[in-house]
Image 1 (tube, rainbow, N blue to C red):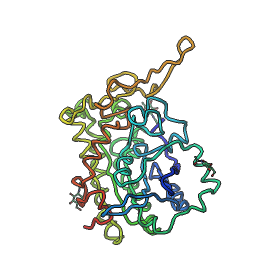
Image 2 (image 1 turned 180 degrees about the horizontal axis):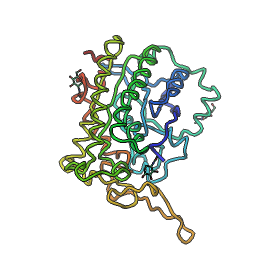
Image 3 (image 1 turned 180 degrees about the vertical axis):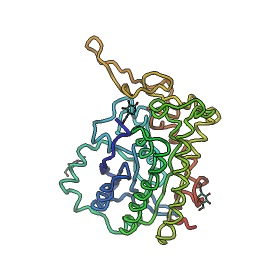
Image 4 (image 1 turned 120 degrees about the vertical axis):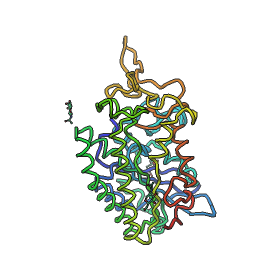
Length: 361
Ligand SMILES: *[C@@H]1O[C@H](CO)[C@@H](O)[C@H](O)[C@H]1NC(C)=O
Ligand SMILES: *[C@@H]1O[C@H](CO)[C@@H](O)[C@H](O)[C@H]1NC(C)=O
Ligand SMILES: *[C@@H]1O[C@H](CO)[C@@H](O)[C@H](O)[C@H]1NC(C)=O
């Protein structure tokens, strides 16, 4: 349901906000090159940024997977069912979480309006060209913040195809080559400000731990799959090196590398210290060691005596939990993660989000 898509769906979210609109494009799987073509075709965007003494990002373009998707997956594959969205929005809003995603916290902290996500009809509007008249000025494109969140889907999908760790490692250069092509294309279209999240410790996620078998010595003392996290870290080292090269090759670009891995690893490893519990167990799901069952996902229902009964239920207190549905993080965890990244202490270079147009190495 969530991680196996490799296609790319553009996401358009017009939202009345004073006299302007917010349009955010969400893409998943950087690996598919036509995502980029979509972006380049769809030079629409814009947003109303709050006045600020720092950077003025009139828009965010997000490239990510379902961790930062605000509705593309839902629009394409049917809405997320309840209890998705329950903690913050009170109803499913196309996000793979009980509430806000990291990208939501980023957008609101930049003074951008909340991203709504009932999109099924919005794509239609675009395909009928209704936005043509409203195409934003060239400069929005160059002033936008490009947020990029990559790695997890490409790496876990390779494992689910039964690739060995060695094979998965050998695919990293290809994934990064596509990343470079995407960045270069955005740059040549005028994009300058890149905010890049490295990949998280996916070896701690229920959907990985449940689906992939590990030998005892491969499980670390927090219960995570060590080989998977080593692959994530290798990917991140190479991503960091790739960025060093891009800074040289694209001298007008401003690249901020955000070490999401270390933040998530800290949260999962010292959950109690940070006010959370059961770090490796999904809040919403249907039983098993990790409360994760690939066939009975969060929000699943069965019919009993003619009545629909929810079997993929939420836990009592999602605000105490880190993992929402076995794949994605909770609103509470995303908020905590956002608080770590906003001031730049996990970034390279160490600049706050609101100055991400000024970072220079
Ligand atoms: C699509 O466009 C029509 C006509 O401009 C508008 O009435 C409708 O609200 C739009 N739908 C969305 C979801 O924005
Ligand atoms: C991976 O291996 C498992 C166990 O041998 C098998 O059931 C599954 O179908 C394989 N998956 C793929 C995508 O080949
Ligand atoms: C990324 O590489 C730079 C050197 O280019 C290094 O100083 C920095 O610590 C690295 N960041 C991370 C998170 O590994």
